[in-house]
Length: 80
Image (cartoon, rainbow, N blue to C red; front, side, top):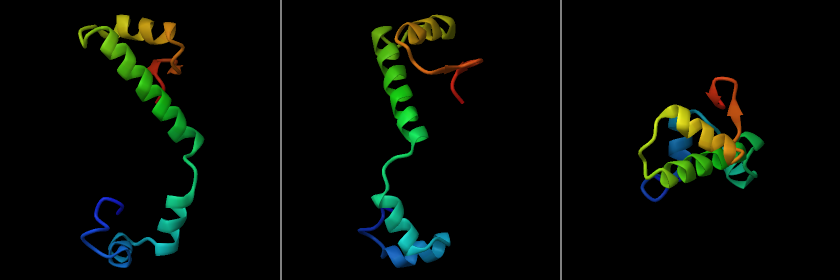
């Protein structure tokens, strides 16, 4: 909705998406959730590992490098 608000009114998009306009504006005002913050940190770590290997490494080396950088990893590799 944020990307299209210049083209269409928020009220019309909210009606089509079956959400309330107050819910949308409330969502805009809220702080990011803990999970969203964790996802952003993980993405930054993945990008750093990828850049340091010049984009040329396999999963085992990638996972070891991420663990060295203290990235949040799950039991099967990356946090799901």
